[in-house]
Length: 388
Ligand code: APR
Ligand code: PHB
Image 1 (spheres, rainbow, N blue to C red):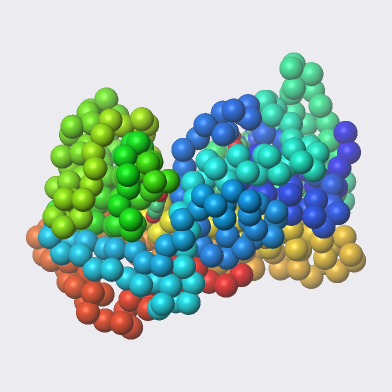
Image 2: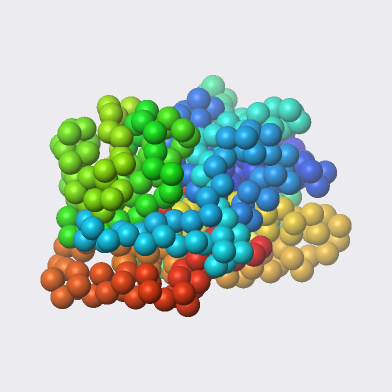
Protein backbone atom coordinates (compact mmCIF):
# COMPACT_ATOMS: atom_id res chain seq x y z
CA UNK A 1 0.00 0.00 0.00
CA UNK A 2 1.03 3.60 -0.46
CA UNK A 3 -0.03 6.81 1.26
CA UNK A 4 1.31 10.24 2.14
CA UNK A 5 1.04 9.95 5.93
CA UNK A 6 1.03 6.60 7.74
CA UNK A 7 -0.62 7.13 11.13
CA UNK A 8 0.18 4.59 13.84
CA UNK A 9 -2.65 4.46 16.42
CA UNK A 10 -6.35 5.20 16.00
CA UNK A 11 -7.18 6.85 19.34
CA UNK A 12 -8.26 10.50 19.48
CA UNK A 13 -4.88 11.81 18.22
CA UNK A 14 -4.56 9.45 15.23
CA UNK A 15 -8.20 9.58 14.12
CA UNK A 16 -8.43 13.38 14.39
CA UNK A 17 -5.16 13.77 12.48
CA UNK A 18 -6.57 11.62 9.66
CA UNK A 19 -9.64 13.89 9.41
CA UNK A 20 -7.64 17.12 9.56
CA UNK A 21 -5.28 15.86 6.86
CA UNK A 22 -8.22 14.80 4.70
CA UNK A 23 -9.54 18.37 4.90
CA UNK A 24 -6.16 19.56 3.59
CA UNK A 25 -6.32 17.08 0.72
CA UNK A 26 -3.61 14.88 2.25
CA UNK A 27 -3.99 11.13 2.07
CA UNK A 28 -3.39 8.95 5.14
CA UNK A 29 -3.85 5.42 6.46
CA UNK A 30 -4.48 4.79 10.18
CA UNK A 31 -3.13 1.53 11.57
CA UNK A 32 -4.66 0.59 14.94
CA UNK A 33 -3.70 -2.44 17.04
CA UNK A 34 -7.09 -2.95 18.70
CA UNK A 35 -10.53 -3.59 17.23
CA UNK A 36 -12.82 -0.63 16.60
CA UNK A 37 -15.19 -1.75 19.37
CA UNK A 38 -12.36 -2.08 21.85
CA UNK A 39 -11.23 1.51 21.23
CA UNK A 40 -14.84 2.71 21.50
CA UNK A 41 -15.32 0.90 24.80
CA UNK A 42 -12.56 2.72 26.67
CA UNK A 43 -13.77 5.17 29.32
CA UNK A 44 -11.47 8.18 29.48
CA UNK A 45 -11.54 11.82 30.58
CA UNK A 46 -14.18 14.33 29.60
CA UNK A 47 -13.27 18.02 29.83
CA UNK A 48 -12.49 20.00 26.68
CA UNK A 49 -10.70 23.33 26.52
CA UNK A 50 -12.53 25.79 24.28
CA UNK A 51 -9.72 25.67 21.69
CA UNK A 52 -10.26 21.88 21.51
CA UNK A 53 -13.99 22.42 20.96
CA UNK A 54 -13.12 24.76 18.08
CA UNK A 55 -10.65 22.32 16.50
CA UNK A 56 -13.28 19.53 16.70
CA UNK A 57 -15.94 21.82 15.22
CA UNK A 58 -13.63 22.84 12.39
CA UNK A 59 -13.00 19.15 11.73
CA UNK A 60 -16.77 18.77 11.17
CA UNK A 61 -17.60 17.19 14.52
CA UNK A 62 -20.03 19.77 15.84
CA UNK A 63 -23.40 18.01 15.35
CA UNK A 64 -23.54 15.93 18.52
CA UNK A 65 -20.99 17.93 20.50
CA UNK A 66 -23.11 21.07 20.27
CA UNK A 67 -26.18 19.21 21.53
CA UNK A 68 -24.73 16.86 24.14
CA UNK A 69 -21.68 18.79 25.30
CA UNK A 70 -22.21 20.80 28.50
CA UNK A 71 -20.68 24.26 28.58
CA UNK A 72 -19.23 25.08 32.01
CA UNK A 73 -18.39 28.57 33.14
CA UNK A 74 -16.95 27.63 36.51
CA UNK A 75 -15.29 24.94 38.60
CA UNK A 76 -15.44 24.37 42.34
CA UNK A 77 -12.64 23.49 44.71
CA UNK A 78 -13.24 22.19 48.22
CA UNK A 79 -11.14 21.39 51.26
CA UNK A 80 -11.43 19.91 54.79
CA UNK A 81 -14.79 18.37 53.95
CA UNK A 82 -16.40 21.71 54.78
CA UNK A 83 -15.15 24.67 52.69
CA UNK A 84 -15.79 25.28 49.02
CA UNK A 85 -15.04 28.04 46.50
CA UNK A 86 -16.35 28.58 43.01
CA UNK A 87 -13.92 29.88 40.36
CA UNK A 88 -15.65 31.66 37.50
CA UNK A 89 -13.16 30.60 34.83
CA UNK A 90 -15.19 32.00 31.91
CA UNK A 91 -15.30 35.49 33.41
CA UNK A 92 -11.70 35.44 34.62
CA UNK A 93 -10.08 33.82 31.58
CA UNK A 94 -12.49 34.80 28.83
CA UNK A 95 -13.43 31.25 27.78
CA UNK A 96 -15.60 28.49 29.22
CA UNK A 97 -14.86 24.76 28.88
CA UNK A 98 -17.04 21.83 27.90
CA UNK A 99 -17.86 18.45 29.43
CA UNK A 100 -18.02 15.90 26.63
CA UNK A 101 -16.68 12.38 27.13
CA UNK A 102 -13.72 11.10 25.15
CA UNK A 103 -15.77 7.98 24.42
CA UNK A 104 -18.28 10.13 22.53
CA UNK A 105 -15.51 12.04 20.75
CA UNK A 106 -14.07 8.73 19.57
CA UNK A 107 -17.49 7.68 18.22
CA UNK A 108 -17.83 11.03 16.43
CA UNK A 109 -14.31 10.72 14.97
CA UNK A 110 -14.92 7.23 13.57
CA UNK A 111 -18.33 8.29 12.17
CA UNK A 112 -16.75 11.33 10.47
CA UNK A 113 -13.96 9.08 9.16
CA UNK A 114 -16.55 6.68 7.69
CA UNK A 115 -18.34 9.60 6.01
CA UNK A 116 -15.20 10.58 4.08
CA UNK A 117 -14.02 7.01 3.49
CA UNK A 118 -10.95 7.52 5.65
CA UNK A 119 -8.69 4.49 5.62
CA UNK A 120 -8.62 2.88 9.09
CA UNK A 121 -7.08 -0.56 9.53
CA UNK A 122 -7.99 -2.20 12.84
CA UNK A 123 -6.45 -5.23 14.57
CA UNK A 124 -3.06 -4.53 13.01
CA UNK A 125 -0.46 -6.58 14.91
CA UNK A 126 3.26 -6.06 15.24
CA UNK A 127 3.44 -2.63 13.66
CA UNK A 128 7.04 -1.79 12.74
CA UNK A 129 8.37 1.51 11.49
CA UNK A 130 11.28 1.57 9.02
CA UNK A 131 13.71 4.05 7.44
CA UNK A 132 12.32 7.22 9.01
CA UNK A 133 15.76 8.81 8.60
CA UNK A 134 15.32 8.60 4.82
CA UNK A 135 12.87 10.33 2.42
CA UNK A 136 11.06 7.04 1.90
CA UNK A 137 9.90 5.61 5.23
CA UNK A 138 7.60 2.58 5.41
CA UNK A 139 5.70 0.63 8.00
CA UNK A 140 4.76 -3.02 8.23
CA UNK A 141 2.15 -4.87 10.25
CA UNK A 142 0.40 -8.21 10.40
CA UNK A 143 -3.24 -8.47 9.40
CA UNK A 144 -4.94 -11.89 9.59
CA UNK A 145 -1.46 -13.46 9.60
CA UNK A 146 -0.29 -11.68 6.41
CA UNK A 147 2.47 -9.06 6.50
CA UNK A 148 1.37 -5.77 4.95
CA UNK A 149 3.71 -2.94 3.90
CA UNK A 150 2.75 0.73 3.58
CA UNK A 151 5.16 3.12 1.84
CA UNK A 152 4.73 6.75 2.86
CA UNK A 153 6.33 10.20 3.06
CA UNK A 154 5.86 10.68 6.78
CA UNK A 155 4.96 8.52 9.82
CA UNK A 156 2.79 10.03 12.58
CA UNK A 157 3.28 8.22 15.89
CA UNK A 158 -0.10 8.51 17.62
CA UNK A 159 0.02 5.15 19.41
CA UNK A 160 -0.27 6.24 23.01
CA UNK A 161 2.10 5.79 25.92
CA UNK A 162 2.63 2.05 25.35
CA UNK A 163 3.04 2.36 21.58
CA UNK A 164 5.94 1.44 19.36
CA UNK A 165 6.66 4.84 17.70
CA UNK A 166 8.62 6.42 20.52
CA UNK A 167 10.91 3.38 20.78
CA UNK A 168 12.11 4.02 17.21
CA UNK A 169 13.99 7.11 18.41
CA UNK A 170 17.33 5.89 19.79
CA UNK A 171 18.08 6.70 23.43
CA UNK A 172 21.03 8.83 22.35
CA UNK A 173 18.68 11.10 20.35
CA UNK A 174 15.95 11.65 22.96
CA UNK A 175 15.56 13.00 26.47
CA UNK A 176 12.83 11.64 28.71
CA UNK A 177 11.39 13.51 31.70
CA UNK A 178 9.31 11.47 34.10
CA UNK A 179 7.53 11.71 37.43
CA UNK A 180 5.41 8.98 38.98
CA UNK A 181 3.00 9.87 41.75
CA UNK A 182 2.60 7.54 44.76
CA UNK A 183 -1.16 7.04 44.30
CA UNK A 184 -3.83 6.29 41.72
CA UNK A 185 -7.40 7.33 40.91
CA UNK A 186 -10.34 5.01 41.33
CA UNK A 187 -12.88 6.09 38.69
CA UNK A 188 -16.58 5.24 38.93
CA UNK A 189 -19.42 5.75 36.46
CA UNK A 190 -22.96 5.73 37.82
CA UNK A 191 -26.34 6.33 36.22
CA UNK A 192 -27.26 9.10 38.63
CA UNK A 193 -27.68 12.85 38.09
CA UNK A 194 -24.31 14.62 38.48
CA UNK A 195 -23.52 17.77 40.43
CA UNK A 196 -24.05 20.76 38.11
CA UNK A 197 -20.44 22.00 38.51
CA UNK A 198 -17.13 20.12 38.36
CA UNK A 199 -15.79 19.81 41.90
CA UNK A 200 -12.19 19.08 42.96
CA UNK A 201 -11.73 18.28 46.66
CA UNK A 202 -8.67 18.18 48.92
CA UNK A 203 -9.15 16.08 52.07
CA UNK A 204 -6.85 14.45 54.58
CA UNK A 205 -8.18 11.06 53.40
CA UNK A 206 -7.16 11.96 49.84
CA UNK A 207 -8.39 13.74 46.73
CA UNK A 208 -11.91 13.41 45.23
CA UNK A 209 -13.44 14.70 41.98
CA UNK A 210 -17.09 14.96 40.91
CA UNK A 211 -17.63 15.16 37.15
CA UNK A 212 -20.32 14.31 34.65
CA UNK A 213 -21.10 12.81 31.28
CA UNK A 214 -24.78 13.74 30.90
CA UNK A 215 -27.95 14.43 32.92
CA UNK A 216 -28.15 10.84 34.13
CA UNK A 217 -24.50 9.80 34.03
CA UNK A 218 -21.98 10.88 36.64
CA UNK A 219 -18.23 10.34 36.73
CA UNK A 220 -16.47 10.36 40.09
CA UNK A 221 -12.90 9.74 41.20
CA UNK A 222 -11.24 9.19 44.56
CA UNK A 223 -7.51 9.01 45.20
CA UNK A 224 -6.51 5.45 46.14
CA UNK A 225 -3.36 3.47 46.84
CA UNK A 226 -1.44 2.04 43.88
CA UNK A 227 -1.73 -1.37 45.52
CA UNK A 228 -5.55 -1.21 45.64
CA UNK A 229 -7.69 -3.37 43.36
CA UNK A 230 -11.24 -2.54 42.28
CA UNK A 231 -12.44 -5.61 44.21
CA UNK A 232 -11.34 -3.84 47.41
CA UNK A 233 -13.61 -0.91 46.55
CA UNK A 234 -17.22 -1.96 47.01
CA UNK A 235 -19.79 0.64 45.95
CA UNK A 236 -20.53 1.31 49.64
CA UNK A 237 -16.86 1.96 50.44
CA UNK A 238 -16.54 4.22 47.41
CA UNK A 239 -19.60 6.36 48.22
CA UNK A 240 -18.57 6.60 51.91
CA UNK A 241 -15.15 7.93 50.97
CA UNK A 242 -16.47 10.27 48.29
CA UNK A 243 -19.05 11.81 50.61
CA UNK A 244 -16.47 12.18 53.40
CA UNK A 245 -13.92 13.93 51.16
CA UNK A 246 -16.33 16.31 49.44
CA UNK A 247 -17.48 19.43 51.39
CA UNK A 248 -20.77 18.82 53.27
CA UNK A 249 -22.76 21.37 51.27
CA UNK A 250 -21.90 19.48 48.06
CA UNK A 251 -22.00 15.98 49.53
CA UNK A 252 -25.61 16.53 50.57
CA UNK A 253 -26.53 17.05 46.88
CA UNK A 254 -24.82 13.91 45.55
CA UNK A 255 -27.20 11.18 44.44
CA UNK A 256 -25.62 7.75 44.99
CA UNK A 257 -26.47 4.57 43.09
CA UNK A 258 -24.91 1.39 41.73
CA UNK A 259 -21.68 1.79 39.78
CA UNK A 260 -21.69 0.68 36.13
CA UNK A 261 -17.90 0.92 35.66
CA UNK A 262 -14.98 1.01 38.06
CA UNK A 263 -11.30 1.23 37.23
CA UNK A 264 -8.00 2.29 38.79
CA UNK A 265 -5.35 4.31 36.94
CA UNK A 266 -1.90 5.39 38.14
CA UNK A 267 -0.87 9.05 37.87
CA UNK A 268 2.21 9.97 35.92
CA UNK A 269 3.90 12.93 34.22
CA UNK A 270 6.11 12.13 31.22
CA UNK A 271 7.57 14.06 28.30
CA UNK A 272 9.95 12.94 25.55
CA UNK A 273 11.96 15.46 23.57
CA UNK A 274 12.15 16.04 20.66
CA UNK A 275 8.85 14.98 19.04
CA UNK A 276 10.57 14.42 15.69
CA UNK A 277 13.07 11.86 14.47
CA UNK A 278 13.68 12.23 10.74
CA UNK A 279 10.28 11.70 9.13
CA UNK A 280 8.64 10.35 12.30
CA UNK A 281 6.50 12.82 14.28
CA UNK A 282 5.04 11.95 17.70
CA UNK A 283 1.68 13.32 18.91
CA UNK A 284 -0.58 12.78 21.93
CA UNK A 285 0.09 10.22 24.66
CA UNK A 286 2.90 8.70 22.55
CA UNK A 287 4.89 11.82 23.40
CA UNK A 288 3.61 12.90 26.80
CA UNK A 289 1.45 11.91 29.74
CA UNK A 290 -0.04 14.21 32.35
CA UNK A 291 -1.92 13.28 35.53
CA UNK A 292 -5.66 13.84 34.93
CA UNK A 293 -5.99 16.48 37.68
CA UNK A 294 -5.66 19.35 35.21
CA UNK A 295 -7.91 17.69 32.58
CA UNK A 296 -5.21 18.26 29.94
CA UNK A 297 -4.34 14.87 28.34
CA UNK A 298 -6.94 14.83 25.58
CA UNK A 299 -6.57 18.58 24.99
CA UNK A 300 -2.83 18.23 24.42
CA UNK A 301 -3.42 15.42 21.93
CA UNK A 302 -5.87 17.64 20.03
CA UNK A 303 -3.43 20.60 20.03
CA UNK A 304 -0.54 18.40 18.82
CA UNK A 305 -2.44 17.08 15.80
CA UNK A 306 -3.78 20.55 15.01
CA UNK A 307 -0.17 21.83 14.77
CA UNK A 308 0.98 18.72 12.92
CA UNK A 309 -1.79 18.88 10.32
CA UNK A 310 -1.03 22.56 9.55
CA UNK A 311 2.68 21.79 9.36
CA UNK A 312 2.12 18.88 6.97
CA UNK A 313 -0.16 21.01 4.79
CA UNK A 314 2.60 23.65 4.53
CA UNK A 315 5.17 20.93 3.84
CA UNK A 316 3.14 19.64 0.87
CA UNK A 317 2.86 23.20 -0.41
CA UNK A 318 6.65 23.44 -0.43
CA UNK A 319 7.21 25.27 2.87
CA UNK A 320 9.21 23.13 5.34
CA UNK A 321 9.40 25.67 8.19
CA UNK A 322 6.30 24.66 10.20
CA UNK A 323 7.21 20.98 10.10
CA UNK A 324 10.77 21.75 11.22
CA UNK A 325 9.26 23.79 14.08
CA UNK A 326 6.56 21.22 14.99
CA UNK A 327 8.42 19.69 17.92
CA UNK A 328 9.29 23.05 19.50
CA UNK A 329 5.79 24.47 18.86
CA UNK A 330 3.98 21.50 20.38
CA UNK A 331 6.40 21.19 23.31
CA UNK A 332 5.78 24.82 24.37
CA UNK A 333 2.15 23.95 25.04
CA UNK A 334 2.99 20.51 26.42
CA UNK A 335 5.26 21.87 29.15
CA UNK A 336 2.74 24.51 30.11
CA UNK A 337 0.11 21.78 30.66
CA UNK A 338 2.63 19.45 32.32
CA UNK A 339 3.45 22.15 34.84
CA UNK A 340 -0.21 22.94 35.51
CA UNK A 341 -1.21 19.27 35.89
CA UNK A 342 1.70 18.71 38.31
CA UNK A 343 0.71 21.83 40.30
CA UNK A 344 -2.97 20.79 40.55
CA UNK A 345 -1.93 17.27 41.53
CA UNK A 346 0.41 18.51 44.26
CA UNK A 347 -2.19 20.97 45.54
CA UNK A 348 -5.10 18.53 45.76
CA UNK A 349 -3.66 15.12 46.78
CA UNK A 350 -2.56 13.53 50.01
CA UNK A 351 1.03 12.29 49.67
CA UNK A 352 2.15 9.27 51.72
CA UNK A 353 4.82 11.17 53.66
CA UNK A 354 2.58 14.21 54.15
CA UNK A 355 2.56 15.72 57.66
CA UNK A 356 -0.08 17.86 59.36
CA UNK A 357 2.11 20.85 58.45
CA UNK A 358 1.95 19.93 54.75
CA UNK A 359 -1.82 19.44 54.99
CA UNK A 360 -2.27 22.91 56.52
CA UNK A 361 0.03 24.44 53.90
CA UNK A 362 -2.09 22.91 51.09
CA UNK A 363 -5.29 24.19 52.73
CA UNK A 364 -3.73 27.64 53.09
CA UNK A 365 -2.99 27.63 49.36
CA UNK A 366 -6.70 26.98 48.74
CA UNK A 367 -7.75 29.65 51.24
CA UNK A 368 -5.46 32.15 49.50
CA UNK A 369 -6.94 31.16 46.14
CA UNK A 370 -10.46 31.63 47.51
CA UNK A 371 -9.64 35.19 48.58
CA UNK A 372 -7.54 36.39 45.66
CA UNK A 373 -8.89 37.34 42.25
CA UNK A 374 -5.30 37.48 40.95
CA UNK A 375 -4.63 33.87 42.03
CA UNK A 376 -7.98 32.69 40.64
CA UNK A 377 -7.30 34.43 37.33
CA UNK A 378 -3.94 32.68 37.04
CA UNK A 379 -5.53 29.28 37.74
CA UNK A 380 -8.47 29.97 35.41
CA UNK A 381 -6.17 31.01 32.55
CA UNK A 382 -4.24 27.76 32.83
CA UNK A 383 -7.34 25.61 33.33
CA UNK A 384 -9.05 26.84 30.17
CA UNK A 385 -5.74 26.61 28.27
CA UNK A 386 -3.57 28.78 26.05
CA UNK A 387 -4.74 29.95 22.67
CA UNK A 388 -3.45 27.72 19.90
N1 APR B 1 0.34 -0.30 16.87
C1 APR B 1 -0.85 0.27 16.52
N2 APR B 1 -1.64 0.92 17.40
C2 APR B 1 -1.22 0.99 18.66
C3 APR B 1 0.00 0.44 19.10
C4 APR B 1 0.80 -0.24 18.13
N3 APR B 1 1.98 -0.78 18.48
N4 APR B 1 0.15 0.70 20.42
C5 APR B 1 -0.93 1.38 20.79
N5 APR B 1 -1.78 1.57 19.76
C6 APR B 1 -3.07 2.27 19.75
C7 APR B 1 -3.89 2.04 21.00
O1 APR B 1 -4.65 0.84 20.91
C8 APR B 1 -4.77 3.27 21.03
O2 APR B 1 -5.99 3.08 20.37
O3 APR B 1 -2.84 3.67 19.73
C9 APR B 1 -3.98 4.33 20.28
C10 APR B 1 -3.51 5.44 21.18
O4 APR B 1 -4.64 6.10 21.72
P1 APR B 1 -4.65 6.82 23.15
O5 APR B 1 -3.90 5.99 24.13
O6 APR B 1 -6.04 7.18 23.45
O7 APR B 1 -3.74 8.14 22.92
P2 APR B 1 -4.04 9.46 22.09
O8 APR B 1 -4.75 9.17 20.81
O9 APR B 1 -2.74 10.18 22.07
O10 APR B 1 -5.10 10.24 22.98
C11 APR B 1 -4.76 11.10 24.00
O11 APR B 1 -5.82 11.89 26.02
O12 APR B 1 -7.32 11.87 27.78
C12 APR B 1 -6.08 11.46 27.34
O13 APR B 1 -4.92 9.42 27.79
C13 APR B 1 -6.09 9.98 27.29
O14 APR B 1 -6.33 8.57 25.43
C14 APR B 1 -6.25 9.79 25.80
C15 APR B 1 -5.27 10.79 25.35
C1 PHB C 1 -13.62 13.48 33.86
O1 PHB C 1 -14.76 13.92 33.71
O2 PHB C 1 -13.34 12.30 33.59
C2 PHB C 1 -12.55 14.38 34.38
C3 PHB C 1 -12.86 15.70 34.67
C4 PHB C 1 -11.87 16.54 35.15
C5 PHB C 1 -10.60 16.06 35.35
C6 PHB C 1 -10.28 14.75 35.05
C7 PHB C 1 -11.27 13.90 34.58
O3 PHB C 1 -9.64 16.90 35.84
